[in-house]
View 1 (cartoon, rainbow, N blue to C red):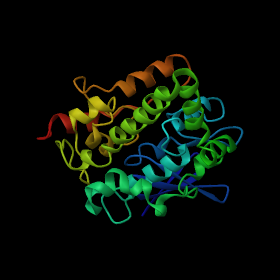
View 2: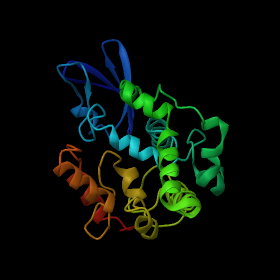
View 3: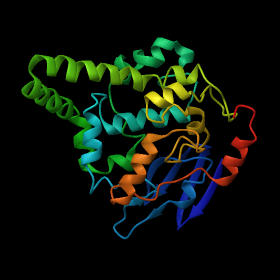
Length: 266
């Protein structure tokens, strides 16, 4: 257990990827990477928690709402499970580890009643925003809207192929990151999990397949750490930052890149 003081607030590090921040007697959980992220946490004049990098939920709600059109539940639900995955990677408490079976990690976990509810305790920093809570609770609005529009524009073929077909395809491509990217690929970093870099999955998911990189430094906005690792998602984030929809995109530190260059799995 290690305790740090930043900006007059107590930051207690519970492990390399998680910290509980005590703010005015309220504990707020955040995810970082080897404390680099937590060291920059501040409180603004309005009392809002400020974490470097990301999107301001108050001003850009169209982005998390747009994410719900993928029909993969809400932003708080995903954030809570993703944080649990990093904190308990490949243990019994990991929501979608392949150690419980490849099918479970791919799609079984998301269909399980055990993971139906959103654990707001894990995402208290995000759940502070009523807009995000609304979008998370009514996450069906996005996909239903797209489904109806698909039918109105393209009829039954628009609904069946344009919406249902593309959505199922998107599901399985997304879920490859949770399943295959922990089974097939190369390990550049010696992380305490089974995460792997898989260039095929990276191509299919616009960069999410550089999963071992992501587990080494989760706070980085990009998952393709080197120029030859195509990461279209990061390029989109860079574009969003240019037009003011994203800010303070974090990159992996020099030490992490140097570690990667010298690794056998590179």
